[in-house]
Length: 251
Image (cartoon, rainbow, N blue to C red; front, side, top):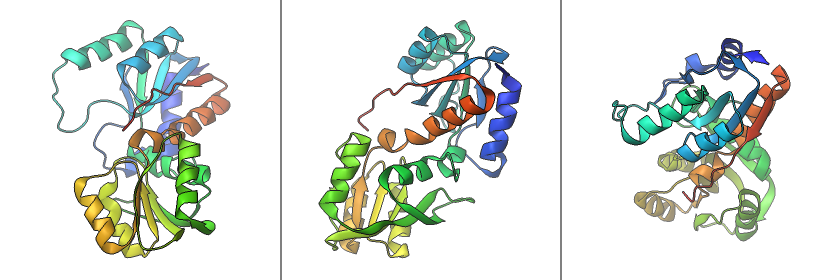
């Protein structure tokens, strides 16, 4: 068991939340019980995750995509009302970490995806300080189809692929989630391929006209691993129970 305030102080410090100018508040978003025995982790705090966490007797829910995003309707009505009421009726705290979780060098989404796909990390790129995108390489030049098959096998999702000029991939840049706009920065790095979660219409043309392999492997699929790693660490550090619940999302 751990006090909610102790859990928050530790995790905020671990992820260095004060370094980030984010689109949402990081850390505690909805306050529940003072003491935490069990946390449920998930990618996004949707209603299905909330309902399953309540059924599991969770004291807190830890997610990558929480609430109160810049520009959203501030009124507590409709879907937002139902979600918040579920949390408060069950006295469950909601804790969310967005960019700090993308960027963390041990528990972050990008470094965890690198571990899953066998990528070495050589540096960072993208906007912000610290930048959340990473670049590096595969252990050896890998045929494109073999790399795509590996993504499909590990992430459980067939990636969208825009073919580049090279028959094999070794150098690669990546950024989980909706980071398709980073493709031009990836091109400037001179890598063979760029991997992210989502794709936009113009991304296809940029990739084709610059001869770089572009791979869209899913926003949800690429961002499952940071929150799992963080939850497992907190469980071990504080001696509390944790459970990752994966709510499938085709995007």
